[in-house]
Image (tube, rainbow, N blue to C red; front, side, top):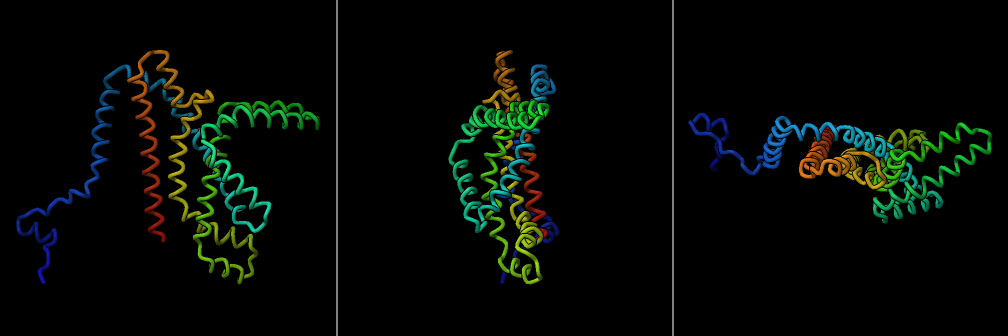
Length: 280
């Protein structure tokens, strides 16, 4: 049997081991070169520095919008996912109807509908109820919160992505072996305790990478909030381009900022996947 020489043997014989070119992350190298070129442009060209300063508030609002909407989607998705696994016909039907309807409507249409139809109606109803019970201050506060453009965008994105996260949660819960539930019930736990203390912790660890990917998708889809005049990154770029007529520099910077945010999110998802595999 002929055994191939290892890297140490090849170096000992005066020869370098061959470079595994197929494993070289060429896309990282291309992005690095492009990033250096763009960084040089930003550092040397005043127009890019001005563009970055103008867009920075839009970046912060994009991050705020994405985090708030994803937090709402996590809660809505968990409730809907548990209801989809429930044996109660009303809960199952309501959750299934929500998931199928929301996933069957384009996110932009859903966002516009919630912002200009559902939110004003809900605001009027809640304000009327608060007024009826003698709380005019609460009525004004509710009207202000619901009619705020950023809050309406958070509500629309959160409800939209909650339907997708419901299926992620459901798949994660069903991936937990049935024997875990049976063991928990044999120890005297109720069904709710078994779900809360045994099943959900394992399911959350399973669905962490998909949840991270959905957050990156929501971060990109937050650009749809520009359709309801929320001054996030895309809307800020549109306003700057209309004001200065410098579309080339403006949208180059907008695309670069989105790319940096999504690459940072992708790196975080890889860390989660690696940690999950090490634990498993």
